[in-house]
Image (cartoon, rainbow, N blue to C red; front, side, top):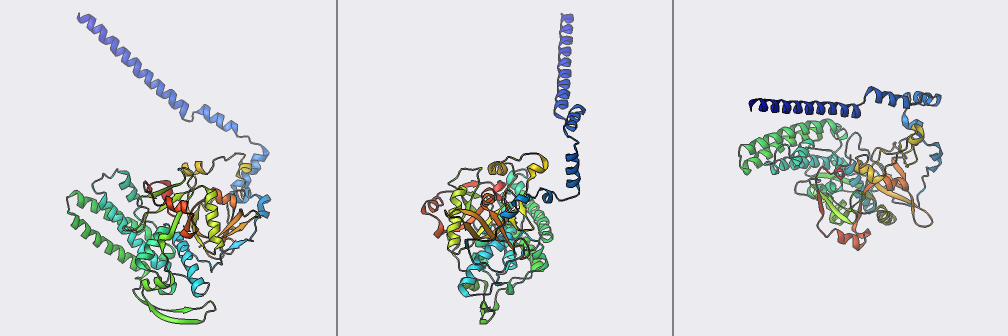
Length: 475
């Protein structure tokens, strides 16, 4: 009996050994198939033809800018600066090396109306640094309060992880402009001027982000130690005092009251008055922001649905960004109606794609990468968004459209905020094909929206998480 049991055990051991060896060999075989083996590498290398043509291309690409070589010369004649419908434009602004395009764009929409209503000089501007000061303070509070709200979630929770990855940003969107102006008012550029840190936000943003992460860990530790809610809120206020100090040292303190002389378009003084930020807003930017609606083209999601993105706001007690998703052929008529009525719009797109920087011209045919590399690039807009190859990256002010004899758009123009020397006198011109492929957001006023779209905003939006690709704030 013992001999039988011994023989049985040896057979089991042998079988297990065989299975283990088979698994190892199988794993090695899979590794050889999936990793780059010498045989696979040889096959890959042999596929590259060292022809005289490829050698010439290699030399050209190694020593030159790819876009200079891929530039489609046949498309040079497509650049035309005539527009059948154009909103009167003002002096072009310059966000310098900051990520405040969203703010400059929103302010440009407001200043266009103020200039037209009060006959102000073309170079009149609202103070971007004033609004940015409050933006950074409010975003800091948004982060700290969100940390308190999620105190019971583990650090590995996706929302908590996202918060610590994104404690602060100088980017944003139009809802932020609306909430900040409503809460803090607005001032002219002369009342609070730009500083080195507002023109170049990255260093200050990194310093603040580092401190906010430290504060976030402290709040979570306090919560873990069972600190009462009142204690957490009290400590948060102390943290915001530190943030305020850093902002004041970088930007100066926002004015509570100021004296300002209004000039007409010829530079002649009209009146001098004392204002608060709120009284100035009531006179020169008294917009009802509830009548502004974000329209989006996101082909990865169903159309005719309103979406909302969690934590996509600038003010904790403000509004998340909400948008109605529509097909491109239904967005264009809304923008055309606005332009025909001399109304500029907040507009965002994936500005870096096929941009001829020398001319300020955006066209899908600007660069022929397929011919240069002998490789086709076939993804459509939906596929590009789904794979993170494209998304909204920059906000500008949509101000012109050129229509054909059938009232269909041929090209569009936006007022940029990269200074008057960039592109076409500070503007960018885009073909309608490019507009369809790389435009993402436009803010339309209520009077230009058909009732069927307004009704869609009455329903409950579909909430998306903050890490959704469409969150991406404009820089």
